[in-house]
Length: 53
Image (cartoon, rainbow, N blue to C red; front, side, top):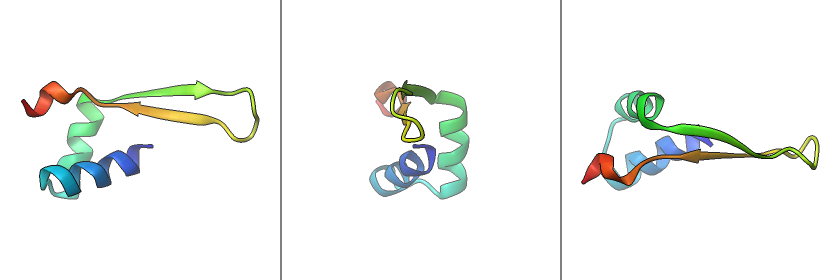
């Protein structure tokens, strides 16, 4: 989830990968969304849009 968010930030905001990782580590929220179907857990990453406004 984190690496996909970094890729998304690099593509849409034009950030370098290092900058995107720093931003994700400070502003992001990683959540376990579903653990019922082991070992296929669902992990979600939430990132506030207000960071870029």
